[in-house]
Length: 237
Image 1 (cartoon, rainbow, N blue to C red):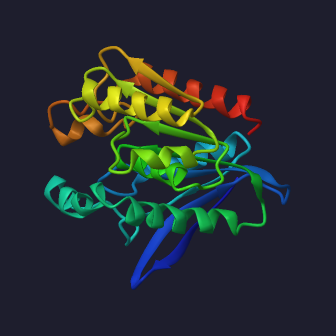
Image 2: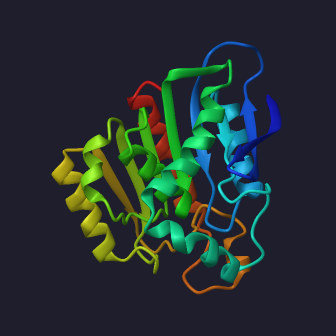
Image 3: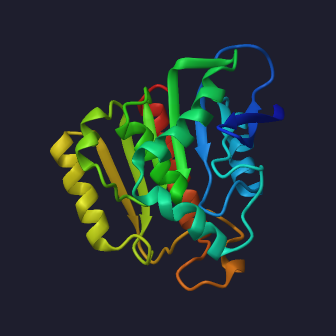
């Protein structure tokens, strides 16, 4: 496996993501990894490495800049707040990372997926709503809401979202609105609900935050990963 940090510019800010790829020069299916709301961390980087071990070239982007997590939840919400109502800005941040991935010689541009966690899942979905050429989009405990649901008609790939039933950030009403959005746009989509799981169920360090409703769940982590791999196989990734 080959790994290296890649710096890229968005306006005047330097962003630092991690590229992970199988050894050799053969073309590989590619996966964009969009981190959780607080920023890129070892968990996001390890996901990219894990994907490379399965034969994918993966780029864990950095949508905040600086290549590190923000200090706390206050800083996180200050950074994310303006993006919740700005799909174009969110898509631009995701597209910048996607451009890095597409520029790699090993990337098979005909087989590209985007996956994301928390707001990173929202970013992956917004990339698809913006018409990015993605075979698959997967959101793990991802925010599902958008201010432009009509843009779902631009989605060309298959969509999977994996949500915990006890996630306070993604209530049943938001899930229902997403279902209506996908149905109206005739997207090939699925939503996996995991009983008892809370927000950030894929992050082993989630519970350290000490925030109610944010908690790692190993079984749900494993089940949702298998669901993603199954989707990748279905779409020829």
